[in-house]
Image (cartoon, rainbow, N blue to C red; front, side, top):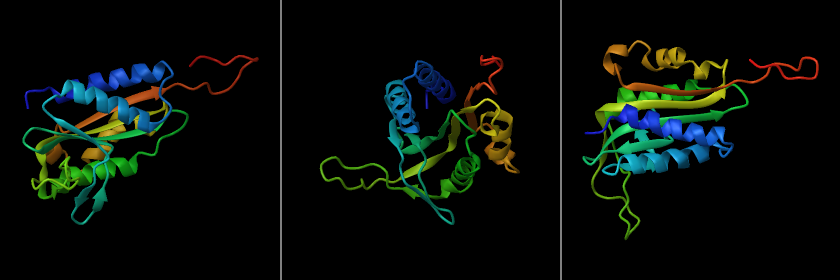
Length: 189
């Protein structure tokens, strides 16, 4: 691809977080919609899908939040989003999903694209690019493990860092919460 996918994703996430900070995001699905629109605009030669079903042998069916498919019908981005701005996001299952797709997904092919006239899947199968980027985007409390880039990166790579090197991107947005009221005022952190 001729696109800098990490740059595109960072810019799309930054835009989504600007909308969040403006008070116009109330759910993870809203983030899906914002990221979808940003990625479609930034990657006109790609197809962006929300919540496709990816059956991976020995793992079952995974449903990532967003995928980007290039013009060669290969998935080049798998994106998981967690939106728990008021608390501590649980991230381990999402990272495990991304790891399983990264390690075992290249041996699979998927029916993802529909024929608009019939509503049936196209005959062409979608595969995962060997350079696919796996992304974990999260909005959560500033002291949550899920917003710690080092922790989630280590969880993604595990013992397979050599096989997966350079294929993970963490996009955290930590939220600072007051811990307690002091003298009728909420202290700044």
